Image (cartoon, rainbow, N blue to C red; front, side):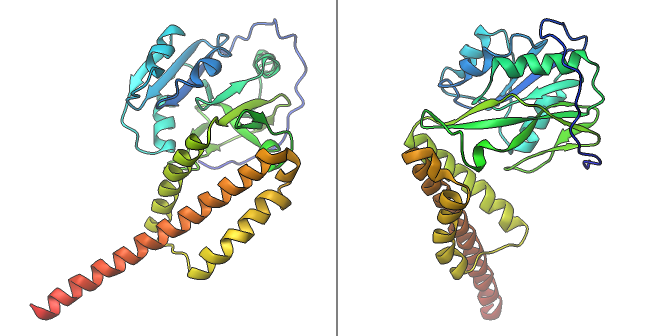
Length: 283
């Protein structure tokens, strides 16, 4: 499914109190999200249903979701794209709000969404801006707080890609860009940052390896200073203070880890092939 049209729709503003005739299913995938899931769910009371697909959390995530009357399903994690699309398939409504467990809608955004849906939109999907909240600091500068992401869509016209990581919503129709923001509470501690970076870098390296890609020694060595300058200077995270420096450093580490893991996979594969060839020659 490809995006065939992208443009902003200037829909008429309708008072937030106007109820939408279009019902919305909120869908969220979770795994050990007890530190943030309550804040996320607290902003979804206007949705017709909340579906949670949990990957067998070992903390209090599921119990918290029950307190918000969520419909909870358990499923082994097989990649972000497939997991999210499975959650979408469980929605009983065509309109789906697919957000992450650490994303919190502002009140203004919830009102804006309902206003647009009440106007019987021609859009197939809605993209909304997001501010990164990193180590309890909301970034108002930098690339991470100037992007928009598709979070609301008609599932008859859109679906998640099958990518294990860095998944995206593929839309067949018009995309409307909203004005109010989501706050992304991505990392609340250094430990969490390192854990996620390790997990994501493994997923990305595996995807690249399966596509036959590899990284040279030069790419690994020169990637360190290049990526740091990109994140800190070019993307203006220096304007976010000390936490902006931390973000640039951790983002650089993610790419470094991904490159090294990819090269390790490639080297291990070559070594295994050599062993097989050697055994055939000596057989």
